[in-house]
Image 1 (cartoon, rainbow, N blue to C red):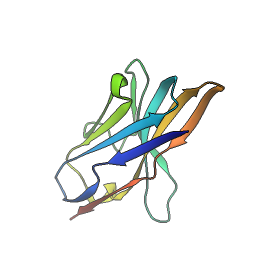
Image 2 (spheres, helix red, strand yellow):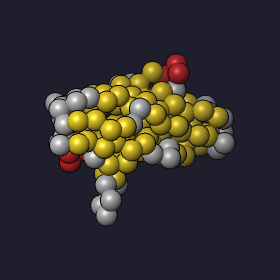
Image 3 (cartoon, helix red, strand yellow):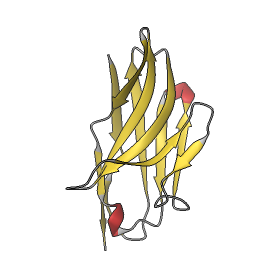
Length: 119
């Protein structure tokens, strides 16, 4: 069994910052790409940023220049530093990971952490 647990969400004023963290635990032989997605009410879940196991990053246009994704492979953790937050960043943020199990790679999601940006 593998579990992803996010933390760090909350309420912040526009222009403020938040740092999200996600830790993967369980029967893990390795982790490939990790990422953050977000979903606002009534909208689809979209990629915010992703990072490969060797540190290559990919950002949604809305996140470029404001958000930074990083990871600690030794701790099975991924982070999302969010600066200059806007009201449109309000959403539930979900951690995602491609985890190598004994039987091969499988995708896992966290339960989500709410980010609310007040204007």
